[in-house]
Amino acid sequence: MKTDEKITLWSERIHEFQFSGQTCKTWCQEHHVPVSTMNYWMHKLKTLDGQSDTDMIFAKMPTETEISKNGTLNISPSPVRIFITNAIRIEVMPECPPEFFRVLIQGLKDHA
Image (tube, rainbow, N blue to C red; front, side, top):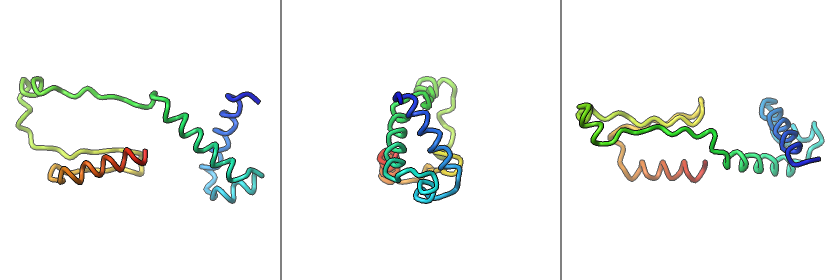
């Protein structure tokens, strides 16, 4: 079996597992798949997905000059909203201590 065929096969299996509502161990037992093999492919596909930058969307941020030209510099600070998934959302208020914000961002980077 070619590598791309294996990737397709395991992507489908992992998708089935994730939508089954079962634990990994139970799903693997029912489908006669070693848990270690499932974990290997879940990690491998996650790594492959991480190498793909197609999901990343960059937003153009205005420069200080553009902001001052538009007169929007005096607007009160807004919270920073980070949407990871529909279920995971983080809102950081302007009064958040900078050190806590740095720790939060570093934690997100470490576990991405």
